[in-house]
Length: 278
Image (cartoon, rainbow, N blue to C red; front, top):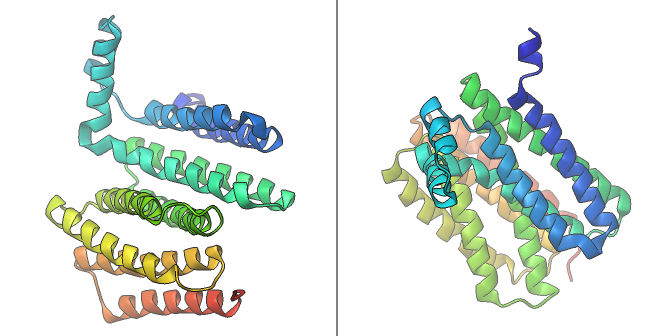
């Protein structure tokens, strides 16, 4: 019983999420340390996921046996690529970039601290979900938490890209390139978590990305707040991914299509109705 409670891999979830919270708070209070702290948190995220990934006895022996750094890196790369383990690194990295972009533009200190706390909570849930997936074989929770984190992270990233375009005047093609990168990686990861076959994964990834880029292009011309634009985009993404998921699972019905479309339309309508048009 005690061994279960104090399982080292379980403690990872508490330790790394709490440490990330402290470091993000430090980043807010000491902006001069922004880049060193941001890079350290990013390294922390990679290490926390790496700690949970299962490694069989042969791999552990190989890591201990290889004295040369280049050989150790080859073993690490083998684990990273095995069964597409790299997809488990995408969500927390997205979440971190999203919250980083979000707090940069916030002026309300209370909202900044709440956002950091929410980030730590989602990060904790993420680590718990992959622990449950690998060591308890609870796949359903994994699908849900990855979907929630990706949608929330993409909302923050999409909103941030609109703001970079409007406020800082970044090149449109650079912004769209980053937009495509985040969307493609999110699609790829979710399709992998949903256990979609590669032949469908790549086709739907390309199709969904093209639709999202077109919507991003259209929203650039609306005189609305970038958070509203981000909410509209993520609502559309919710419908597209949800309908695609049930279709590929051969569980699509008129009720599910209607539910996704109605939820998206309601969110978009509320966002546009409450937006400041400039």
